[in-house]
Length: 109
Image (cartoon, rainbow, N blue to C red; front, side, top):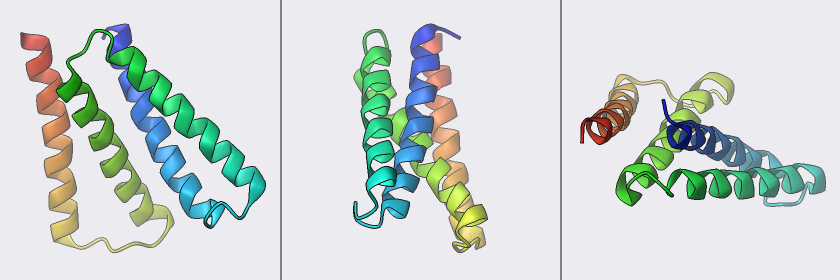
């Protein structure tokens, strides 16, 4: 795996982190949580920008948002007692399949 892909995966993980931070900052009314959330947001964008130096824009952005969306939804199911119905899980599996497909086909070119 190249450095760009490593940066992109870390950027996606940071996106999950700042999404949770938004939830727990309660509209940026909790100062410490808010500061950490903004720092993680900035880190996510910096890592995404580094990955985009060599990865195609569409691929990098789609994977970044896919990791963030799927990861946040999955963790929300486990830690925030969000619904775990079959259709939500199937939709999340489609997002994951799309992310894997984008990575696979980006490397085959």
